Image 1 (cartoon, helix red, strand yellow):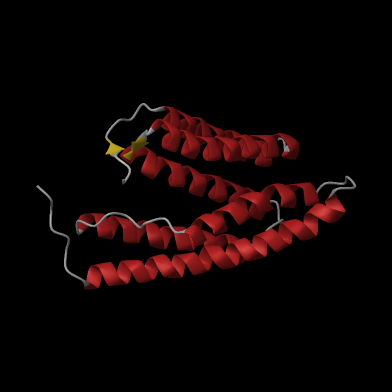
Image 2 (tube, helix red, strand yellow):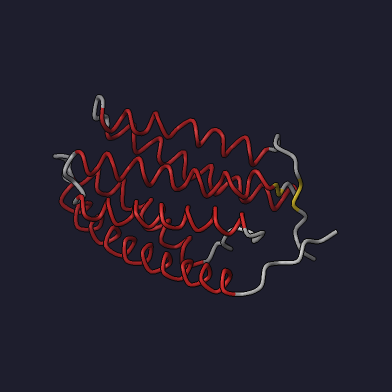
Length: 195
């Protein structure tokens, strides 16, 4: 049996996604203002846990909503963007990597708008895309630990760069796959509106 998507806005999973959304500016401020990397990692961990929890609760409570389907991946993208910009400003991640990942999201964002205008649903999230996001969201705390002076930094830095390299590769590759979906959709017939 397929999942039922409701038009409700106020659901437990959506409230958790909104909590995650409120954490994005806090996360960015902690990284760029006081450079409180430990607290930034805590905010990112809370965001990761609530991301897992909202999906689990949506399935458990049957609270799938159109708002949640848009909000959840959008908040993931905002965390990635905030972390990339902050780590780029702090010279932890090279600017070419920041530009490549941001360009991928901008191109796919435009594709989603075109799909919507033509009557198509947005891209179906793939396991590869989720894996890329997972790798990047694990890379950022490791990179932050790697710029510290603790004994953990020597271990965290190479692990952080390894997660970053794999994450960037998968993120860009999944972008190519989404772009292929886009090309196939716009070349094919428009969907028939259901009554």
